[in-house]
Image (tube, rainbow over all chains, first blue to last red; front, side, top):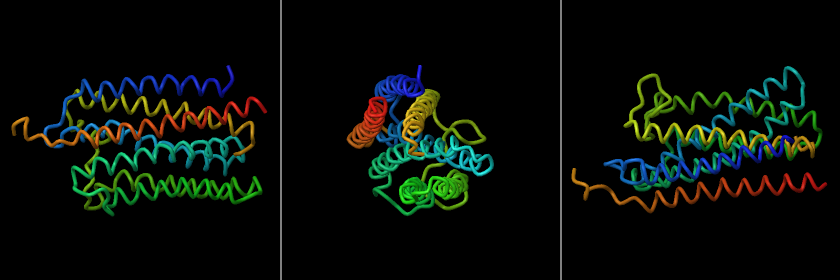
Length: 218
Length: 41
């Protein structure tokens, strides 16, 4: 089985599982008393944010490996991960305001977490614009790697922003040292969604990498 | 708090789920078409 077909299969399975997550979240997961149904936006918003951050982390790590080893496969992988990360960032940045509007009373606020995640989205975009602007493949890969590493540096600030700054954004529910701050039924749905979004990331990246490998659109 | 006091925020939830599905399915289609164009060339 070719890499492209493998990626397609993983994506197809992930999308089926995502359908299952939708059913579980909408039908079988209890409604939160204070936020109402808007709280269920968490089950797509938080995992999409996770996948976007995973994508940026992979871009950064692959960029470091590229700069050390000069292997173009790392550059190609970083490029694939950046494009996939843009898609997940878009999900994160559209579902977040849809939760914020009924809960905070505003679509957007220039709070530290929101501003930093918007910066991450612009870094994904900038990374790809840069790749499109530099014709020389070797220079393109080196410049892009520097942007990718800057994105990696941004990640801890995004995760810790709710602790470092006074923000409106909720604290982590699962990714924290103490026990999850939600009932088990909600945590199971959230963790399942994390797993499915991670698998979806893998499927997308494999496909995108396979396409880049053929076209040399690294 | 009684169940009647639960905020009616279902519309926002439905919009978020639809938008997420559209973006992810849309990107799947884009990758599928690019992959198919690759195998034809």
